[in-house]
Image 1 (spheres, rainbow, N blue to C red):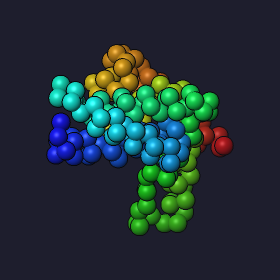
Image 2 (image 1 turned 90 degrees about the vertical axis):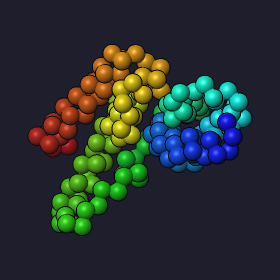
Image 3 (image 1 turned 45 degrees about the vertical axis):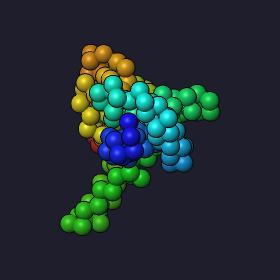
Length: 170
């Protein structure tokens, strides 16, 4: 792989890699470090990259593995904030509606953060990043049924808790 191929196949994925690492690590600085390590690994192993079919999925897998390694070495749980990545402003909303929307996003963020690791990864990759089921299977090294079950359980858990919060208060 030459520099031009690297710029065309790998560099466009850096923002997705960052969001995924940030979701797992909960720290912008640590996520940047992981993405930098991924890019260095890919560049240093560029001779073997010719046979990689889906470069993005392969880079996501490396990101997942490096993030997990970092978490294991620090012995801590990831935390993250959806509102730091997503700006959900709508100038047509009233201040009251805008406040409700922000509170809802914070609630959803807390609910997703409380999910088990596999469910949190799958819901992030599918619903936030927009990856296909096949790509998620490849990235997380899971079979299709595991991905679908994890996504169903994650969505169901978030939905049920949101309904309870909205019906009974916090």
